[in-house]
Image (tube, rainbow, N blue to C red):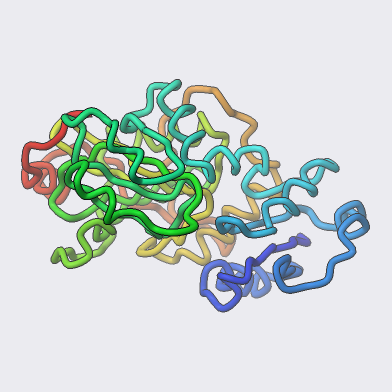
Length: 319
């Protein structure tokens, strides 16, 4: 196959997505790498030529790549993810509205151009998590214990902000990565608790979280995405959704992701926005270089890592 990878300047030296590019080339596929933030492009002709089987983008806030991906989609080319789906998770205000409309377990969300305006949020909803509406990679996320701390939370030139009630936790999040229907769970340190002693690793995926992750893909029409989940006192809460995340701690991430990209390029992805999700897929063991091996099992919250995490969560703000 012939693929075009749009690589933003932020990621031009990163293993993800460049390791995926190397894997695809090793399998004999042709991959063109385009840097929309560092190259002169004859954009109308490059897109209209339509010589690639699919265009692939790992987005970054404010980067030019998404516009180029949308241009490819506008002339009928296959994009990974579906370009129509990405903006809905890049704008966290829009993400919250869509998620709550479809019954996903996300916190109530407030939006304002300045942190000080969150002083009017009901006092019982503090502490608040405040972050940029277009943020990613934990950038600008901070915890504000009460209205009196909002002045210190002010940062210049951030643009629109969102605030959500803090979900009490033991200092770790559950990160769920989704690769065209294949699900992997990892424990990672929460950006709100950078000093928490957390063993970041792959873990089994709780069934309730797997169902929520699958529904995210169905609601937003995403094929490659990640969700951040906090296991709070009232059950799992989705605190972030990202298209094309890092897939950190996923075993054989580059080959799995390369296989997923090929599958999506061949099939055009899932035209499923607004549909309820099916049961998360658990693939059979790998049979060849383009077939991904068995992911971590989908299990219930029995004894073990997730149950221990839930048990360790103190009582906190209800959402």
